[in-house]
Image (cartoon, rainbow, N blue to C red; front, side):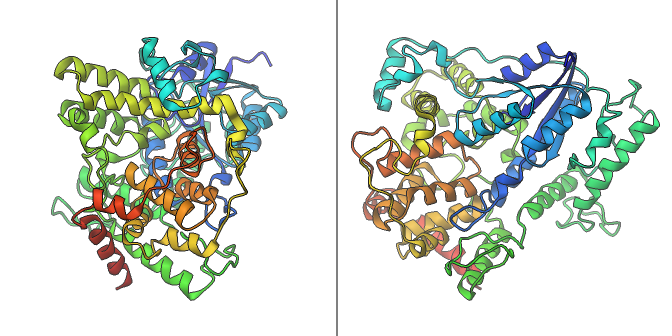
Length: 556
């Protein structure tokens, strides 16, 4: 088209630091429009009877997008959020701003690749940049097509070659301005672009006229009109009544928070409320009936929903190992970098290998994964912090194991580059594997934490209530579903996708294939004896007791 406008589409890279794709987009753009697409398919029903994305992930994403928008504004830009199928809303936006150029990160998973193919078919020039791995695939001591079949051989090859990741890229200090939105503003209503901030005083869009917004107002009629439209969107989300008592001791008769801390608490809870939609069912149906009406289809379904909602409303603050509803664990690059600094300033990395199989608590593992999954934290930034920690406090077995885990994360990414869609077949990479068996009733019991095995049930209740589960428990409950209950591994992978705040398409698929014996592991699957696991990792029964009590609280 000959336009200098570039649309930069954020995907699973919700950060401004160490974002090569964003920097390349800036280098090629005279004007840059950063966007995020809220695709309805992400919340569509699955074949297993529940929504594809649950409330924990939605709320964690919402916080990350708010954080990203704030970071863009500091740099003279802003985030435009589009609601609709990307193959529809992105071409419409491109036409409105007079461009066909889109830049985004590459994601080597089938649905994500199909999505880009649809954009190209619609006439857009889409340029992708690989940036989600710690190591550069081009620097590996073998071609991605020759990735070793087992992780240990991969790790040894990387370490023998002395391979180190690239140095993290600094965040751009300024970004190219938005394009002239005189025409794009008219497209904003049909594509339903809106922000989710609650502050009606501050303008939400850069000025078309180039004037100053220090006064807090738009600088011409077109700016003011765009502001009014977006504020109307905001007000549709805004709860009028505050939900928390005041920390400051002030009166809330006016309906407003009385301190910054109060206001922040209100925003977090409202985000939770919007995601914890009591109309949408959380569990798959026992009865096999349709949930298109948004309600449970039997008394048993309804009872299970009530119990889970009671658990969620309590927010299980004292129990959660990753309390994403509090500022220190909120989605977004700001919270991620603050957590990274706190973690490496402590002695926890030195003890990581010894504590990583813990079941409960904030400190037993690094807790990097939720931010890594949404791309708010770059693995190279995490690795650089690890190296600084080792320089200051010395190399330890624990610090080495953090590198080890980052390599596992890379391995699953490179496995996708090697095998692609084959990883998503029912038999996975195991051509001799029989079709997966499935028991729908047993699967529902597993999702609800009502299998009758106390250790398994505790883990599944924690997952449903908080959106988090330790790595040890993930392996144990996945093994139980496949090898003890005789259910389809793909149903379990879908449930984890819906529930986990750190859901990552590469790691989730890779780990479930590993447990099911349909990946690259030559041992043909991993069964974890749940009784032995409970005796080893919950010897005093505290974990089982804790989550059994929460379940009883939901029954009350």
